[in-house]
Length: 323
Image 1 (cartoon, rainbow, N blue to C red):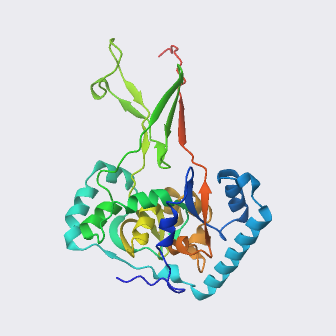
Image 2 (cartoon, rainbow, N blue to C red):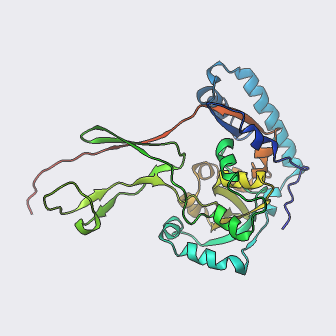
Image 3 (cartoon, rainbow, N blue to C red):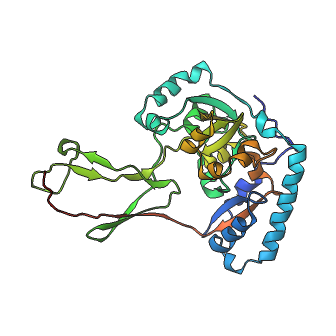
């Protein structure tokens, strides 16, 4: 399958080189021109290095120029998102897919809607995430061989055993804990009730009746998209997708979830898509993945490094009730 980007050729290499030039900051490529000017200005002023001194008028001017270019794209590339290429994976990858689909991690991540694993075109994926860390994408790209075969591509896009970022744990007092990680994918999971035989290494020497656990960790980390109204909206795996495209690859192996009605979109869609479904699902030319590589609608920014923090507070009370 050949990628048809529309609007002329795009040079994918230079910005990965630029990722090595920033020191003491997270160099990111950020889309501008859509959807909201105030969000872009707030992002620059609050999160970029030196952003507090930014010229708001200049920021508005560059966003406006990008917005004008998007208007041109709405004419020249109308319907491009509806022509995205996708096809089933070949028989050689079916054993890998079967093994992945049988894992508890995959089953838990995709338990609500019909799901397939397909080969998809990257350039015409609709995007709702506004920025990508060039440093992280460069680290991922470095793991790829010069010419990845189908098996390597599958394992890169849908890792069987994903790497886990370090997590720091701080006890603030008797009932409060802080969990901190550099990963933007760091998140709390659902509370879990464990029976004594399921919990090992407990410090208590007295009999234990039950254990309540609140896991903190990471998402499935698969490259995945949502198919809705004939379009593919990239949901997760932006950095893997960026690394592949910068490496010269036009297609990726992707988990696709099928949405047939808007209530299903509310169940699995990203907040931005759920809040503005008409924009992402029906606009003549929504933001596309290839826009990250187009300097007319994107900008390289040095963003202050941030860490994700999860605070867990226990509220324990003891009392008696009468049956």
